[in-house]
Picture 1 (cartoon, rainbow, N blue to C red):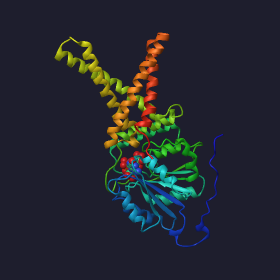
Picture 2: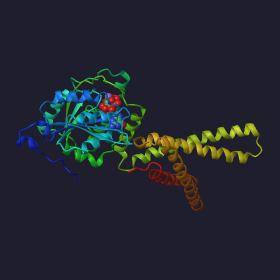
Picture 3: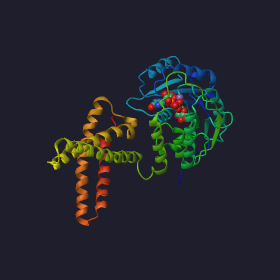
Picture 4: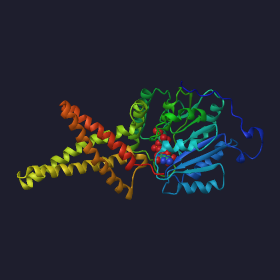
Length: 395
Ligand code: GDD
Ligand code: MN
């Protein structure tokens, strides 16, 4: 049976009973702000929230991925002046979506909002959004650039076109009826969030789409228009990788119940490795033949094959580190050690591949099927073993 989102009356908080200094009362609204190198924007945002939210009982949680510019420390110093300000400081992690999820889970208020930390989102619509949720007839309010009254600010034509295309794709594939599912600015009830939690993919940038597409029952949505402002300080973290993460999210939402999406990414990278292998093999073999002549050709082949294997495995390793494990990318010494373990894992995988393919071929004589079975088993082996030995989650 699908769990349903309980109907709720407006929540009663201590504050409705006890009157007092609003700072010491539990928050009704938690604003989650994912940050990565936003130190200079953080004080501006806190100040903006103070003036926009007035007497509302709010708190703000910055979820920072150990930014090098000291964002977390900046938040801490603000927190010492105002207990409504908190930080969740993550170490060795990256990812906007997962940051939002963890921030929401670290709070208790009945309503939660997510907004960017760079002043691009208009905090003056927060009260409007809260008002909509309090009425109880919607679960989610989206700050939208596309409904009447909203706007894209100073975005380039190219980015506007890309954003529109991504929106079309999302609405077709996930059947969520949100005008601006790419928005990073929204507010929802904790109950709605909790109902989506088990289904979340938490990859990449598109946390709103993720939440909406993971809800067991269609969310009741309202949209409030706003115009994107210009970033105050620093630069956007949106890059090519974000696009790939978006594809992963869509794949996960459409096929995720069949195969883990990391495995799909891993297999695609593996496919690229085959191409790399053949290119290197041909180049090295040609080179050796040109330099030393055709005598001893089988030895040259063995050398070329070994070089190609090493290069292809390394290329797979680095691509997986960027694309498949973008959220826990290895760096420095861990990168070197990861390369070693990955080669070991794949070395064993290669034996398994040849062994299984050969065994099948001897029995049934189907060349292609035997080869494919070998490849499939090895992919799964390499994937699961490298997730344990190479990209293991450290505690
Ligand atoms: N913790 C954490 N970890 N925060 C991050 C990370 C990360 O890996 N990457 C980005 N952020 C934070 C930024 O510091 C900022 O506060 C917010 O997430 C949005 O990042 P930006 O880099 O400013 O994104 P943008 O302005 O290009 O994109 C915005 O608009 C898009 C609309 O198409 C975001 O709101 C997107 O979510 C939104 O889809
Ligand atoms: Mn931004």
